[in-house]
Length: 323
Image 1 (cartoon, rainbow, N blue to C red):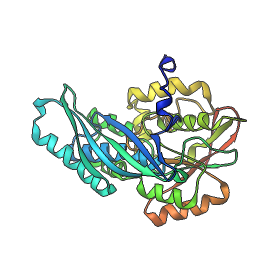
Image 2: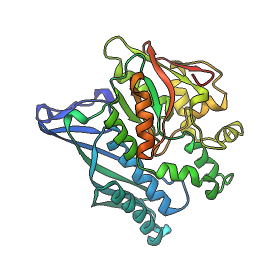
Image 3: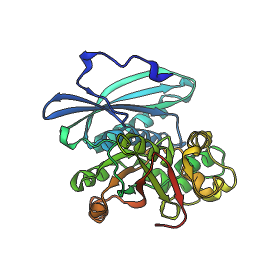
């Protein structure tokens, strides 16, 4: 249905049309604007952490494109019953994260709502030659992930009283970590494609990368289950049936494209888990893989080779072992 919507006019010819993490607008031959917006309901109880994670999540789309964040604007929906003190902590967490990114907070907009929501509209800048798209993955490329998987499962456990926020703190810290270091490593080494891993889960964003990269011969992917880094306790919780509805929706949407071990395997299910402020996913040439991992470490980030791009037409094979 959405494909039937108008596609714009010639007056918007400067907008580079891609199915990507952010919109890229050509301003001059040497400058692009990169724009994105993202907000969501709390996945943690602490308002400051909510602000930190939501801001890092919104900024991530800018980093995934190889751009530098320039300005950010708050997006707030807030129930008056929760009080202004909690909202102030959300905004403080977001502001601190924006400042850490080097961007300027430029105001925002708020409405009253029954359910709290927070995020950012972010504008970044990049040189055209530095912009990295989610299309471009080539057969033989390695798929490298920079954050662990499973925060959606942990958030569901927290919501249901099965996990305390202190137990979730390592995952919260990782979610609040900016993807700026990973983006610097990407630009220094050079990759064929990049996206950030968020609400569609790891497999959903792999599928997006494959679709964007299949303009000619088509490509598929092989994911090595044992190589995918998971937050502690995620598989145990999944075995107990603790996960969000988004995981089931992602699985239903993608399962016809995925072949391999049983879809009831907790590790397999974790690959469908919706992520909040997840890592970057790179498709990198094999001869640059070691340099990328080394540069990630030098920048203070992590990287795991979780699979490779193979010949195919968008299919995803799940393989036992670590490759």
